[in-house]
Length: 103
Length: 458
Image 1 (tube, rainbow over the protein chains, first blue to last red):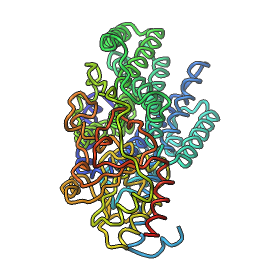
Image 2: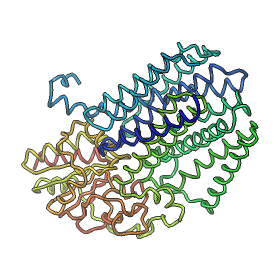
Image 3: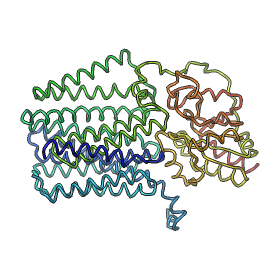
Image 4: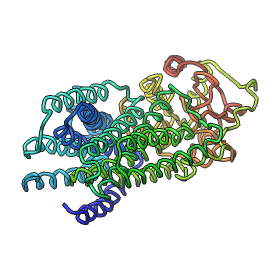
């Protein structure tokens, strides 16, 4: 894809990024940060791409490390975000169904 | 090139990421938001293997993914909720590191043949990724209290930082003009040093804002790496995080009443060493659990102010028990939640929700502040900086300007504290020496349990 097309996507994404989180409530600042943190863990696929085409020991070592770090970021990020939000669940269980009894 | 179906998959994943961020902005849809993001990431990763890209070191790829996933999963499940902010910082750091490494490897692949734009984005990814990596490690060390939480001001630090920044830019330009590998290494090293210098002078109370900023940085590094690799999904995801992270950083700074610039550059001026000097041996009034129980038991209105110390002592449940007991006696009880109680915005809400504290009793700062003047007893459990009047009065205090809970307006204030040690920001709290303040020393859980027992006998 040519540079201008990528630039277009870049600029539009900035606006979307601003727009989607503009109404976040204070209590969700931490989970939102953590969720965003998990999303940039998608850098994992960049790691896979470079490792897939790596030759020579230096390239392979560096790109393996990139895949490893990317996977930690991606998986850990989503799991820890979910754990934070899990804490908000009992409140809903009390007002709604009684399935919270099992916890 | 990437097949059309794969490009469409990437489009779908990008939409999922947008919906994920959108979902995370509202309590009702937050968990769904996380799930959408995770599904998107999974789909994108699996689809990549079927696009016919070159997959030379397949065993290594799979192995690294598995090992990384296990490390991420286990540490995320095992971490105590109190230590969660530093784990997020660490995850952010490794993400930035990954982006930087990708750019380095891609430079080794393509080198001088990529053209000026390629070189520019490679250099950008390396710089931002490295800064996010080393900066996050320092924030981790600060939050883990492995190193001091006070601002670290090194002599001539301002000039060293500027020098490193100028050198980084200089080498970046050199690298773009003449692509050589040793320049990449120098650039990486300089950026890592810059990241450390950038975070060192930040005071403990401002660390969450810095984490958020570094998070946005990693987003940008990922976006730039997307440009380097010609991968649209990385570009979109990285940019989304970069933009939303920047906005979130300024929202957080606003919630803490800290102009972003003073957070980041305030420590450079060197005036932030708080007034920790004033009298260590001044008299304070301390009392036993019985006295505190009597004060609480005969009050009409009580406000509880939970802080990080509560969470460290795992005293959420005894606190709730105390609140329930007081409510039974017909005493009005509320929890006052400072926006940054704990270590990060919203951290305390998470910790109290874990202890099944009814959500309606949690009052935000703006809502509860007018109530303090009509309150008989305020019980501060393991909080310090967020009730420190120095934030209003002492211009030299690192927390000056931060909105605080106006507990000093109440009739009586009781602090449950482990010791006279100052809070995370490392500054003395005048309120501790106020005549209407009573201190109950000891472990928060222990003290609360004793107070509850005394209260039952009342």
